[in-house]
Image 1 (cartoon, protein in one colour):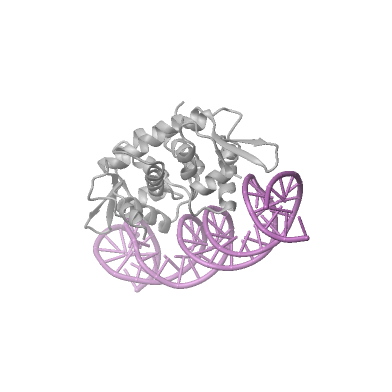
Image 2 (cartoon, rainbow over the protein chains, first blue to last red):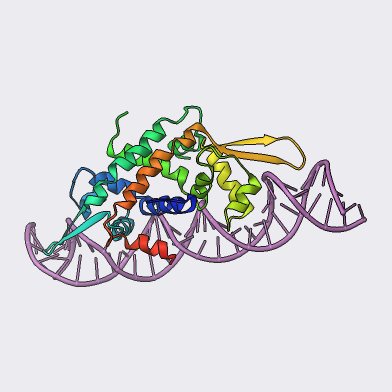
Length: 119
Length: 119
DNA sequence: CCACACGCTTACCTCGAGGTAAGTCCCTTA
DNA sequence: TAAGGGACTTACCTCGAGGTAAGCGTGTGG
């Protein structure tokens, strides 16, 4: 597949569209490694997330084909979430991003520092 | 460097914080390959961007240590932008993201399709 | 009979990213 | 004298992501 500067930018933007969102990466990292979690498990595992947000982000990840939603028809309801195969294969790409971040010249990245401090 | 699920999510989020923004990737792909561009070059090369937005995104990329800004003191003013070494080294990581996107199961990713159609 | 767990859904509000339009400063050329 | 290029800066507005709070439907335990 060949890219022009424009189409490559578009392509990466589309990927970022999938990953951006206050809670998506936190959810992903809860599911990496083949883990299966119930809705309430995620709710408890992710401090600060509201039910509305949790569902919204899960639904978007599902629509993008990154996570799978499995409903068990029973009472009380039981719904499980896991990564799709494609979702799992995100790992090496995210790894590449982390490696890049690690190589940052230490005196640079004031906005990152600021982000880390939580301003 | 070792990561917990939380710190890894944080790390990737920080990287995304650097890359997200309506015009940043378009700018980056204009500069990849060691290219040097003047402000007005970028303005012309990127259809639809306003001066305010262009500067804002350039300044943020500069603050994050991804692009370098070189001022030539002369009249009329001349300012050039290029990637830092670290900025250049983003290439393989973005490549990994594009490869991941290419491996998407073709029937999936409705939100991406929608994004491509421009809805 | 009441409360509770579970997995949502709905209504409402806030705040900041991003857009538009205009202004600024300085020198050059017609 | 006027117009224009270059690189910004400023004021103002809009719209949607994300937050809060409450409601819903259904079966089980006390």
